[in-house]
Length: 270
Image 1 (cartoon, rainbow, N blue to C red):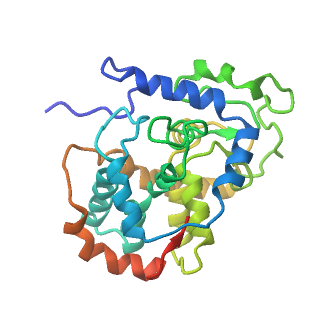
Image 2: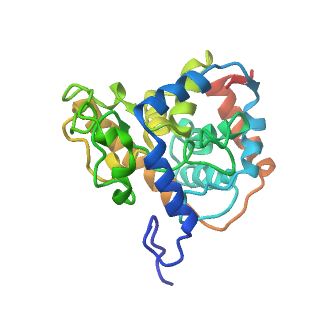
């Protein structure tokens, strides 16, 4: 059987919607936009049970993904089950299950912000650093010039507004579900997930860095350790995509005790 190639954005069957998504994302995700989204969405004022949030992803298909067109909850269960099958630690299994859960942002979202079901350019897709030069390792690099920050001398150099070697923990990434979930869990008082899990959640969509090798002027020694963590997780995030469909209720008995172990039993504030 022919091996499936993932993330082939030039394949003939990639929809025009995928390319248009990235055009809008590259054009609209400026430093100013990202700062505004932090203020708007990092309010932690909406309590929601973990499993309720999971079920909401039955209603969302990620328009940026060229590989699969199932509701996003399926990708989460597929990732978690593959990690479980390899007997990886329980915290990593849970991370696989929740790593895209920040996409529930669409419940608060708007077309204008790119955070709705119809307009997803502020919620999903490969992220990049804002406030410095966009690298050629971005998907569809021809769209980089559309970003108005690239006409600003403060922002269009390899380090831009950042200090050389400051590390990726100290930059602003394009707004999306990774940063949203990371910040929500960082604010969640009963979160005891290890640092590795939080790294997986925060940087799994940062492909221009972890797969493209960009931002050499910004990364530091700590990021080299992060890179190992992300490449390990990426095997389960990328290569588990299939058309197999799960029912959350069928796996809930297994994952609920793990979720309670690391996230407690109360609601999460979004």
